[in-house]
Image (cartoon, rainbow over all chains, first blue to last red; front, side):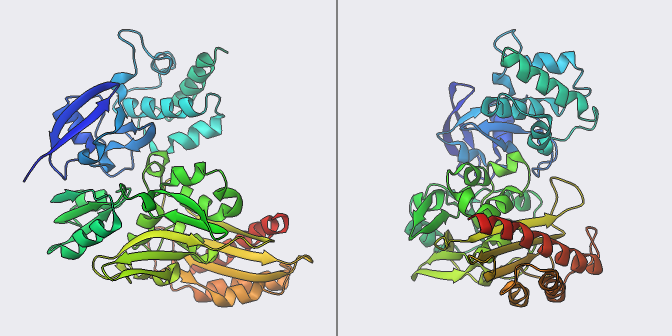
Length: 158
Length: 286
C-alpha cells in the first residue's frame, strides 16, 4: 500500500513524514515524528489524552488521520515550554499538584492552553465544561481546575 | 485502504460511485475513525470531503442559510448570525461530544452516521431543513426527516453525498430550541432529544410549529400530532398537556442502560414542554 508523503508544521517547525492512509495523526506524531508527549488513552475520542491543536483548533489526534494533517499547523505538548522555561500552565500544574500519574497531563495542558488562548479570563464553569473531554483518574479534577484558573490570572498579569 | 481528498463534488461522487468495495465519506471522522478502529468498518476507500468549498461554508441564501455538511460544531458556534436566527440548531450541534469533538464533528456526519440519538438531527427536522444531496445523476433536495430510514440505513444511493443543509428563510416571530436529556451534564448520548420550531403571531398565538424527537425510535421522528397541539395556543396548560401526550404517544423506544421504554416516553413529554416554552419565549422576541 502506497504511503502518503505529508508536509506540515509541528510546533512552528516544518516537518515531512510518510504515513499509511489509515494511520491516525496520533500514531504519526508518536511513531513517525517521535513526539511521544501526546498520549494514547482510549483511542475513541473519549479521554482527551491525545489532544493537540490543528490550525489552532483543539482536536483528539486519535480521531484524525495523519494524511489529513497535510498542509496543517499542529501544536503538541512539546511546543509548550520555551527551552527550560515552563509555560505558566505547566508551572501551575506543578504548584497545585494537578497531576499524579501524569498520563492525562499533556492533554489537559494542551486543552487548557487552547482555552486561555481564546478566552484569557474564563469562569470556573467555563473551565470545567471546556475540559469535560479530558479524563483524569487521579486528581478528582479540582486541582486541575484551580491550576488553570491560577495560570489564567498569571497570564493576564493579575 | 485508499484515501482520497478531492476538491470538487463531481470528483468525490465519481470516486464513491466507482468504488468496488466499502467506500466511506470522511468529514469530521469522530464516528468513522472509531468504527474503523474497532473493526466495525473496514473501508476500501475513504473520501475526505473537507477540501470541497461548498461543504465547508455557511452562506446566507434566499433569506435563510446554506450550511455545508462538513462545517464543524465549533464553526457553527462562531458564526456571527446563525445562532441568533437558529439558536436551537447551534445548541443541538454544540451538544455533540467534548470541545475536542466539536473541533471536528459535523452535522452531515451526525446525520449520515445513522444513529437515532444524533443531537443535531431533531433540531434540523424541527427547523424544516432540507438536505442538498449530490450524486451521479445530479442534485436533489430531501427533507432531513426523510434521510434516515433505520439505524445505519440512509435514503441515499451509492455515490450520493449530502453537500449542505438548507435552512428556510427567517419568518418574523419564529424561533427554535433543542433540549436533550442525559444522565450527566456533558459527554453522553441522548436518552431523549427534542427539537421544536414555532412561529407566533402578534397576539402571542402559535401559528406554525414543528416538533421532532430523537432517541425514542429507530429513526428521528417528526411528530405532527405534537405540532397540532401547539398551533392555535398560547402554550396554555391544556395545549402543553396535549403536546406532552402526543410526544409520548409517538415514541417507540428501546430499553437500554440509559433508560427504560417507560422512562424515555415520560421524558419525551417533559422535554417537549420545556423546549416549547423556550422556543415560544424566543419567538416572541424574534
